[in-house]
Image (cartoon, rainbow, N blue to C red; front, side, top):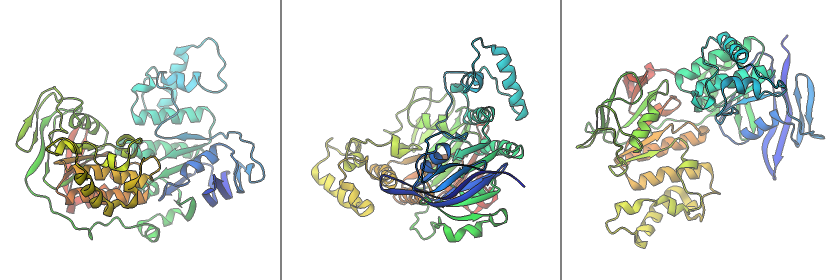
Length: 481
């Protein structure tokens, strides 16, 4: 019988009068991969903090390896031997892999460090995982996958028998995710327990031994292995079907075309985006979408080939201001990086709109017209003096409606569904559909399928920096998860 690693026994956690965890009751066994499907992000950070640190709780108890470590009647604020692998990471960028694994390890007391010995130990550890990564490399040069592997080794060397994986598909490509999941499975066989947190049930189902649906700080249902099928989850999820929406069909006319453009891969990339179309480009190994964003946002030029925007042609290594030419880029975290927190909602919404007005300054009549139109879409939050108190959903809406109002020829959406829970992802799909219906061509750049297929008209798959396959909407079923 496998040993129980973690148990949360009817735990309720409240902070500042708000309940974040409500009667949470579940357990994780040694060597088990427990999935947590996040349909709503409320309580996620509190759950991670509770497992890692013995903070005060309102009710219930927490048990680790059979011992009660936290209780509603007493919390000692001690840390537990739990490691979290997440996007921001815990490594020091300026140090090498070896230094991060050994020198910075708690309890490392040697004053004279033999780098050769440490590097050799790292090579042996990497070899056990079937990998070959130079231990002398600085962390700042590592890919997202290599950072995850280094974090995993750090956790193992620290003696952690329980590891939390916090939405790793947000920053790993499709191929990297599969490779890292294979490593996780092997470590689970050796006795390490994992809590695998993910926004998408298909991702969680394919890796987990059991899975729990987490919503508003409550576990709605625990799915055993035989229950982890699409139909079992349907009563607990919202529909992503956009067939009921008013949809404008794309035209054959190409609004954006890349012809023989070398970005970062082994071969030049070429594709076209039709007017009013939503084209998803799935970059399976994260080689292409980042340099493409740099080109379209005007921070770098192209070494070879041409870019066609309508009738205009662009080439050369000198960067082009594509925003001026009608291309707007929405970053992967628009709520944080695309908006100005010290500005009002209307100031954010109409930012740069004066470029479209003949006489430079926006008149009050223009602003009244804009407010009237978008009040119907977003409600009373349009009158917010500052946006720092808006919800995540409201800030996402503001970011996308800014582009909707600006009405460029092309909107480039970078990893649009990477950050949100189930409800936010559905809302973002509706926002993208609104861009399409207004006549804006949409280019989705992603390293993960997720639910992007629901809004896309066509899909191109890039591998090793080149086009590996192309699918029309009616062929999406061939791709799978």
